Length: 288
Length: 204
Image (cartoon, rainbow over all chains, first blue to last red; front, top):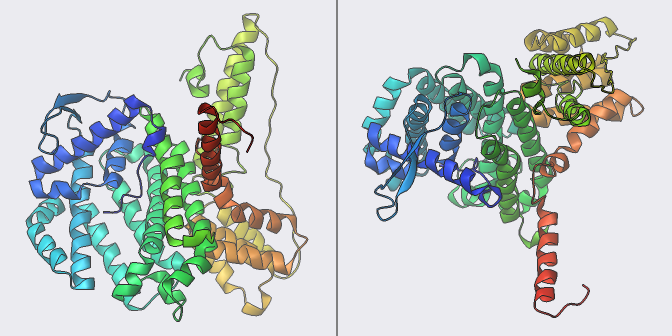
C-alpha cells in the first residue's frame, strides 16, 4: 500500500529486527485467519506500525511462537501471538486495501484494481462490520478527498488535512486507547500528513503520464512534472519535516512500555530515510 | 510512581547522572518546544512530573547524606504588551490560543477587516495554522509578519524555527546515518578505509 512508515532495518539490533518481523508475520497470520489468504499480499508496514505502537502501550510481554508459514515454508518464523491490536490492525489493513483498490478502479479504470476490489469486497464488508467507526471515518474522508480532487484543489494544507484526519480517526477508533487518545490522534494526524505529501511527490511523474489528479501538478499547471519536482522541493521538505517533528513530539508524550528501540527507529530514522530516498528519486542529477 | 523510573535512571545512579538525565528530560519537554503544539498541557504535566521526581530524589539523597547540586528552573511565558488598533482583540486571540480554543480564535481573526491586518495578525494566524497542522499556511503567514515588521523578535523567532524544520529533523541526534550529505561522506570515508585496508593507504 504505502509503506512509508517502516524502520531503517540497518540500524536495528538483531533482536529488534526479530521483534519487528514477529509483528509483521503476526499481522499477516491474523489477516489470513480473519479474512482471505489472498489479502495477505496487501500487508503493509504502516499497519504493522499501528499494531506495534498500540501493543507497546500495554505492559503485557510480547509472546511469539516459532512456526512455519506459507510464505516461508522451509524456515520457521517468529510469529507474534494474537492480541486485540493485531486484530485491529488487520481489519484496518483490509479496509484501506479495499478502498485504495476501489479508488484506483474508479480513477484509472484499471482492470486489475477492479478485479481486486471485487475480489475482496466480502472481506471489506466483514471488516466494516467489525470496525464501523473506523470504516465510516475512512469512507467519509475518501469522499471529501474525491470532492477536492474533482475541484482540482491545489492547496496542499487542505488536501493533506483530509487524509491526516482519516489517520487520526483510525487511531481514535482503536480499542482501549482512551488514556492516550490525545497523543495518538496528533501522532497519527501528522503521520497522515507525511504519508499524503510523500505519496503525492512520489507519484508526480506517474500521475502526469496517466493524467491523474495530483495536488502539485494542479498547482503548477503548465509545467512538466520533473521541473515541478525541483521547484517545490523546498516546500515539500518543509512540510514533511514539520509533520514528522510534530509526530515525534506526540510520540514522546506516550507512555511506551516496550519496543522503544524499534519505535524510535521508525519515527526518527526510518521515516527520514524513506523521505530522503523519495526526494532523491524525484530530483535526479542531484539538483537538490 | 518511582521517581527514578520517571527520570529513566537506576537507583544507584550518581548525582551527576541523575542531574544530566533530568536536564535532558527538561530539554525534551521544554515549554518552548511545545509552545504551539496542541499537546502543550500534556507536556507541561510531564515536566511537572519530572520536576517532582527530581525534587524527591534530591531531597531523599540530602536526607540520607548524599549531596546533590540543585538545579532551579522556573518558566514563565513572557507576556508582552501590545498596542495599536485591535490590540485587545489580539490579546484575546492569544488567550484563546493558549486555551486551545481554536475555532473562537479563528473567528476573531477573521473579523479583523482586511485593511487592518498587520504583522501581529499575520503572526497569530500563523500560530493558529500551526496548531491546526496547516504548516504551509503557517510558514507563509510568519514570513508576511516578518516582512511587515522585520525587527520583531517574536515573529522572527517563529519564522526561523519553522524554516529550519527539515535540517533539524533530518539531522536529529537519534539518526546514526545522518542526512543524505553525511551518507555521501560515509561512502567516501568507506572508500578511504577500503584503500587503507588494501594496503594502498594515501590521504584523500
